Length: 225
Image 1 (cartoon, rainbow, N blue to C red):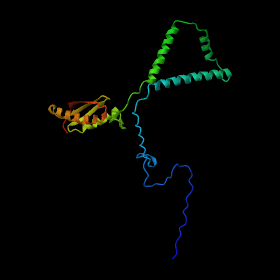
Image 2 (image 1 turned 60 degrees about the vertical axis):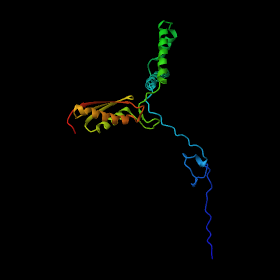
Image 3 (image 1 turned 120 degrees about the vertical axis):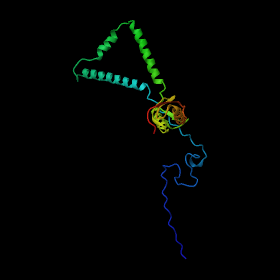
């Protein structure tokens, strides 16, 4: 009886690029259920996405200030080229320096200093002012956000699905959803349609945090469908 000897398997030496063996086993756990290597550590909380906001007010003033500084830089470069003889013409900055050197104290300078201080305070307030929220959140702590115009479109589509509604138009703000509905029913039945539209739109409004109020206006305007 002969026995077959299996050749020894080749195992490459570890490269050292990994901190642990990459082979999978039954004890392998995911990163979100008990930490790495089954150490029993509590999972790290996933950070929430920040709520969308408008661009800071300082953005526009920063662009204007940048354009002014670029213009001043162009003047300085031109004066340097004129001084070196690369460009013909007269320098623009020396007259300004001469004026500052010979200017006398005047009463208007006090008011100019006060005006500059007010401008500085204005820029400071613009810089630290919180940015305006541009989206509405679906649920407390939710990762889903929508613009007011998107909520208005959802409200309009919801109102149009109510039987008897010919058309609908919605204006949405962060505090109020105003729906205008055109129906093809008698004024006696308009109140019923208004209640139905208000109920369906209120269900959509209840998903938002904070929930805006709902106002529905019904007018008659055509044949029934």
